[in-house]
Length: 334
Image 1 (cartoon, rainbow, N blue to C red):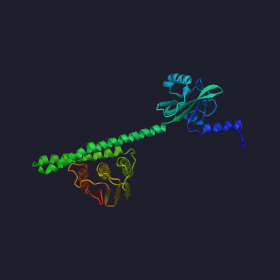
Image 2: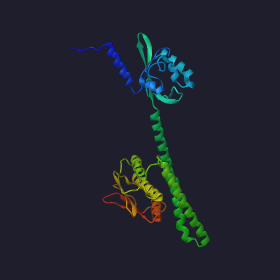
Image 3: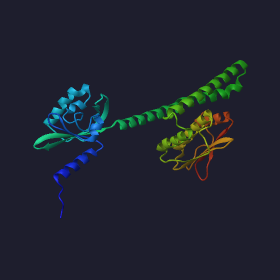
Image 4: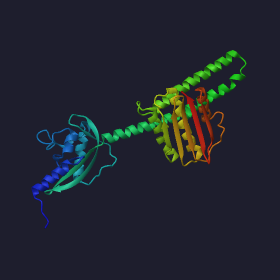
């Protein structure tokens, strides 16, 4: 035998169902008056759940920003004349107004319903403030990453090439005065390169408090989209306390190594091992691709990294790996 619930019990269940919804639910009559509001709607708009301070009896137009209220009255009447179900996610950019006057972004779905032969509208309201803030942060991070990439590929590498070109001709200059001036320009370029590297690190790092270790893992995650796979990275020893100028070079070398794998190696796998000891900081990047030429171009980006590793008293080499691929080994004393 099937047990029938009483009308009172059904009403209690309906109230619990409405109040359990994370979205705001409003029942609005043809005159725009709110006849029912669940707890989420009351909280969202800053009203009391019951009593004189509740949403019940108020005009739904009160929930619309002041400057849009007159227009909303017309839109509501037009909807009442031809009510149709309108789901969320229609692409409309809508704002609602809190009781205190603050505005916040929302998504709204509308559904016509007949109650006691009179048409009503059920409005489901969703606060999308957090979602929009997350999207904004992601877009900002992507834009910062793009700017950092452009600075690295378009600006920094030209400065590297200029420095290498000047360095290659210093021994050919007979005049001591001219030679000293060229060396001074090289030193100025080198200082500027360091400043640009610091700027790139800062721009690419969306969290100012982010550690070097976290930044290295983020680089790998970001480059995985270009590679088509996620390299296996292992970090041994503490790296967060290395000097900034060494950390900048480590970041630049890792980015360049992964760029080469993506652009030239045609690889399906790569491993990265970063080791910090009391004497040195090592980076080894190995892939299983088709390999690249073992002698970098004189004015290429890899030659620039080798040059800067040597400036720090270290080394950077690229050699064929067995059975295929390449191995980059970067080592700088600390």
